[in-house]
Amino acid sequence: MIKRTNAKPAIDTAPSDDRRCCTACGSSRLTDIFESERLPVNVGVMCDTEEEAKNAPVADVILAYCHDCGLVFNRIYDLTKVGFEPGYEVALNHSPVFREFISGVADRLLDRFDLRNKTFLEIGCGDGYFLRLLAERGGNHGIGIDPSVPREGRETFEQGSAEYIRDFFGDKHADIATDFICCLSVFEAVPYPAELLSTVRRIVGERTNVPLYFEVFNAFRAIENRETWSILYEQCNYFSLESLASLFRRCGFEVTDANTCYQGDQYIYVEAKGSDRVVSAEKNASADVADEAGELTLPKVIADFAAAYVERSNYWQEQLNAFRRDKQRVVVWGSGGKGIGFLNALNTDGVIDYVVEINPDKQGKYLPGSGQRIVPIEFLAEYKPDKVIITNALYRDEMRQQASELGVTPEFVVA
Image (tube, rainbow, N blue to C red; front, side, top):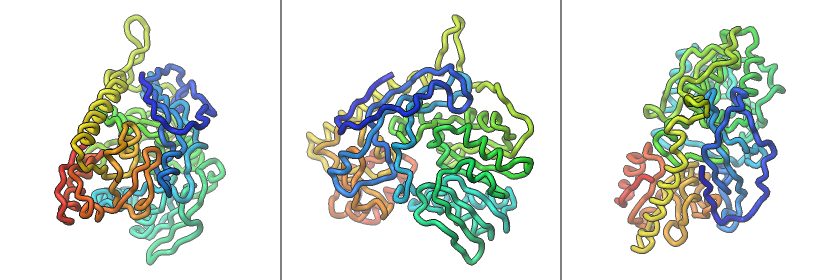
C-alpha cells in the first residue's frame, strides 16, 4: 500500500462513512490495496481561473479488495464531496471513435430487445446523448434521471420523446413503468451498488421480461495493465466482469449476457432480467480467499498494483524533468479522468501549461488540482509542441490525424 501526497490546499477529508464491509456482497473479508491522498474530487467540473483550479476540493482514496466477490472499491468514498450537478461535464461524444461505438450500442440494443414505440429508463443519463439515440431511432419515450442534466422537462423529436429528471435515482422512482432499463458509465460512481440494483429489482417486480443493460469501465483490465492514471475519486467501484455479473445475481437478476466491449475490452457490460432465484453466497472464481495457513491472499495483479503505481509515477516524473531541462514544449491531450489523474500525480510546473481538449464546453477553463489551461485543438498550430502526451492510447490515431490536419506533427507519447 502506498501514499501519494500532493501539496494542495487542505480541506476536511474525514469520511462520512468508512465502509468496513463490501458494498456489493456485504463481506467483511477486505484488504486495503492502495491509498492516495488529496485527489481532485471532480473530474467533470473544470474551473474558471488557475487559482480556483489549484484550490479545487480534494479528498483521499483507500481502495479495498473484497476476497469474496472480487470488487475493488473506495471504502471512504463520500458522495457529498462530488459535484454531480448541472455543469458536470464528462461527455465523450465529441470523439468520432466514441460516437461510432455508442451508436453501435444503441442499434444493437434496439434490435436485441425490440425497442420500438416503448418506454425506457436510463439511470444517469448525463447530457442525454444516449437517451436521445434510443428515443429517436426507435420512436421510444426515454426517461433520464441524473442530478447533472442540463435541462428538465420533456423534449419531442420527429420520432420519439425524452423526459429529463434532475435527481439521484432511488426508491422515489420505484413507480416508473418501463419496458427497458439501462445505465452506462455511472454504476462506477454509486457508493452502494447493491442498494441501487435492489431498487431496480423492485421497479421490475413480477415483470421479469423487462431487460437491463449496465455498462461500466473495465477496471480489472486497467489494474492488470497497470493503467495507474485510472484511479479517480468519483469512481468508487472498480468492477471485473465476474464481480459485476455476480452482483446482479445476488440482487435477484438472471444474467443473460456479460462481456467486454469498446475497442475489445475497454468496458464491460451485463444484460439481465428479473429472476425468482437470488444467489446470496456466490463466490468469485477469480477471488483468492485464503492460503494454506488460512491467511487472506490477493490475486497477483491486485497485490502488485500499488508498487506499479509508484514505479510508473517515478518514471514519468523523470521524463517530465528531462523535458523541462531540454526546454521542450509539451502538452497533454485530454482533460478527462486519466488526464487529470496523470497531471495531479506529478510535478508539472514549468513543463506542462496546457491541455488540449476537443470538447468545447471545457475549452478556456482550467484543470482541477494541477491548474493547466484547457485549449482547443487549433492551439497546436500556434504553440507547435515538441511532444504531446496522451493518457488513453485508444484515441492516439484520432489525435494524430487531427493534429496532422493542422500541419502539426509533434511526437505522440502514451503515458
